[in-house]
Amino acid sequence: MIALLLVVGVAIVVVSAMSVAPLHKAAEPKYAETSRQPPGSPYPVAGYTYDADGVTKLPGCSVVLTDVTVGATSPVLTSNANGYYSTSLGDWCSWSLGDVITIHAEKGVMYGENQGVVAGTGLVLHVTLNLEIPEFPFVALPIVGMVGLFVAVRVISRRD
Image 1 (cartoon, rainbow, N blue to C red):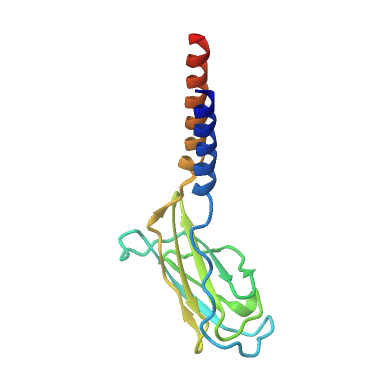
Image 2 (image 1 turned 60 degrees about the vertical axis):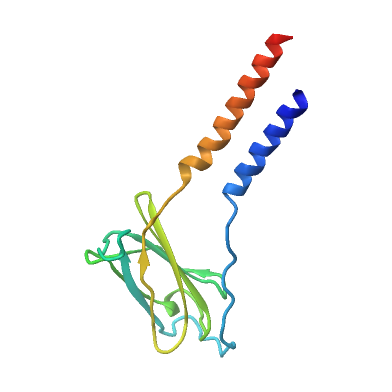
């Protein structure tokens, strides 16, 4: 019986660890590397943040862009009263055509992500906040599992 409890405990730890692991790898660039532009070289990135319905523009979102290709991350931006944000890659990193850019936006307990590729003269990257930040389940699941394991061990030990 103790062995079964140990197996259950290990299963809880494994499931908890899996729940915080990333589910996907960053996309690989689809374009051949071109000459890298130094910081300060303008390349506009702009877009709108949308509510979960995908239509209503959502103001006041915290927006962070990442150039996945070089691993550079923008300072935190805030979408304006119309849900619009804008920046230039050259303000916070060197860039090249073909770089993969991801956007992560949050407001309250909602977030959204999107990605695009640096091509042409600018990048329009909209994001819909339709996912809930899963902080509570990540904390609650291991705690509930451990409490359940403790109660089971306590009940079994009192039988003996």
